[in-house]
Length: 280
Image 1 (cartoon, helix red, strand yellow):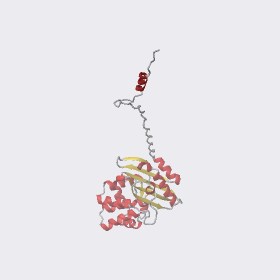
Image 2 (cartoon, rainbow, N blue to C red; image 1 turned 90 degrees about the vertical axis):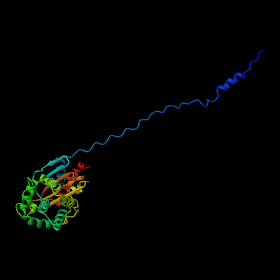
Image 3 (cartoon, rainbow, N blue to C red; image 1 turned 30 degrees about the vertical axis):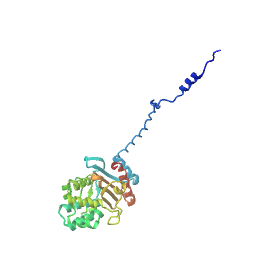
Image 4 (cartoon, one colour; image 1 turned 45 degrees about the horizontal axis):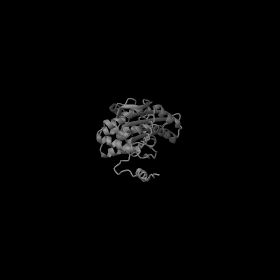
């Protein structure tokens, strides 16, 4: 009987288990591309306030307030918003801007220039009264109105009451434009630097950082106003705002007696705060 050998078959089986030759390339399994997560959409910018929003913010604190507001973009020349911009208000200490323009236009020595700067920075009434008398009171108002092109400004009914000069938000904005565009460099620097250095406490102790200073997180140079009469009180916040003093902001308010000073000032700050999105 013939016997079959299994050795060749075993040899073939062993050969099937031989390692892959060194020169053979082994392909890795393909990696799946995982897309990067999509960036979240940019938040929509907050809506630009309207003049009615500013008036509402003021009256949300003191409901009987009369309001004049004007914001001008000096870069484009546009009014960003305006309401009651031609209504006349008692100027209170805003008339000190007119006094400064008139005194500087007439020429002033170093000592007088320093007094003008102090008057603006501290809203000093004593200096304002002296310069008002020296420059002719109501005649001063007429001169500056003609020089600057003020259309709504009027002298006070009683010549000695410089705080009762009547002025409009639009005229105040024109004064700021005049300071920046028409005054000689040294005079412009004197006025703007004084307004930018206005401390919290004025010469009479009043907190003059209501409105723009406390309401806006932006660079400012301000002239504030506050005054009372037998029937009303006025609180005004005005000035230059933003890098390069791009914006003029004027916020004038009138309140019936016996509104508290703190309430009137808080209403102006609320109005200024409603403008904050313009300066982000």
